[in-house]
Every structure is written in C-alpha cells, then in structure tokens.
Length: 121
Image (cartoon, rainbow, N blue to C red; front, side, top):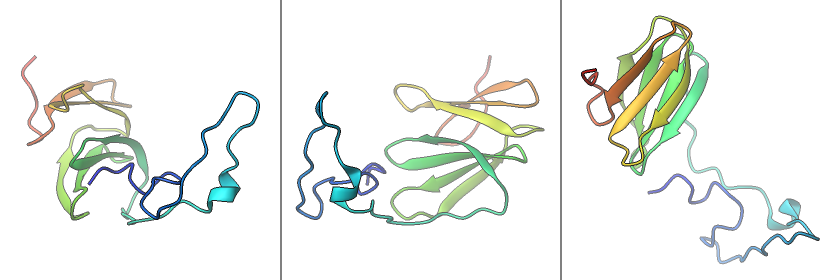
C-alpha cells in the first residue's frame, strides 16, 4: 500500500475523476469533497519529522527517537533512540536503503532503513 493512495483528493478509488488545474483556473478542492482518512497513528509526544518509503513510515520525535510503522498493518515495528535532542529532519536515500536523521544535538546519523543500524562512516 502506498501512503499517497486515498490521502489526496480524487485518487480514483471511489470512481470520481479529478479535473486538472490550469494556469487560468485552479482546481476547486471543495468540489471534490474532503480527503479520505485511512488510519490515524498516535504517539505520546510530538512528531517533528517524517519520511516515507513504499512499506514504512518513519517519524522523528521530540525526545530524539525515530519510530517506524508498517504501512501495510500500521503496527509500530521499532523505536530507535537516535539522538539526544529532538529529531528535526529525516531523509530517505533514493533507493530507500539509507535513512538520514538530523537533530538538535548537532549530529547527522546515517542508518540502514531496514534494521535501524548505524552505517559505518
């Protein structure tokens, strides 16, 4: 399941078509109805950064953790104590193999996105 399905208006799942926006007339979002909410993931503290792959959602928290959820089941797969301060940015490499994180502790970590292990520098 790709996260983009159902999140944006008119993804075709309900049979509705979405008119393309033009330079002279923007698309009217209200005419398409509200976006569909498939699932809500909760956490005890603020989530400050997100990254997404085909199979996982990565969330950086205020306490320096990186949380990993499955997009198929919405179960939390792991919690990684990645930083000593708030995670401010997450980035997945083009092939989704590496997860980079930066935080208020002035450190950039490079991890294997599958197992969360720090990559050698």
